Length: 134
Image 1: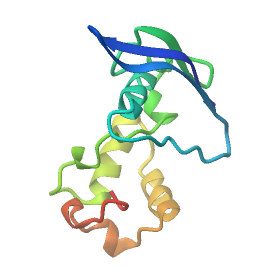
Image 2 (image 1 turned 90 degrees about the horizontal axis):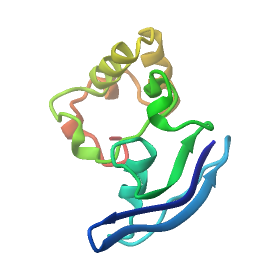
Image 3 (image 1 turned 60 degrees about the vertical axis):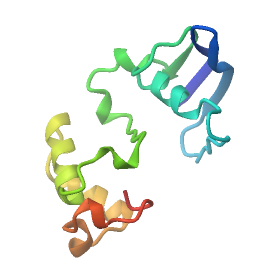
Image 4 (image 1 turned 30 degrees about the horizontal axis):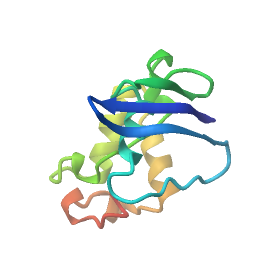
């Protein structure tokens, strides 16, 4: 479960996230919607420890992200679909992630099956993927 409680992030006189609270429960899909500049990305950055909160807290499974040993084995986040190298294949990107997190190579096959990418699609370069596929 992801729990965000009274999260605020200010940059000088500008408040990017203002007293946000919500919970994402296991087994449910949670939408995080709002107009550009509403603080969605800043909130996600706080949840995964990339940006410190000015006040409040964000917990993943009851723990701060930075306190989770090997957090990539529990939390996946891609804040910018263009952040991956366009010359790599989907399979290569998943393989690098699995190796980094100490996961078996069989996990790559499981994930490809879960997201519905067949062998040919998994070997296409990321630059040829649609935004949704990324």
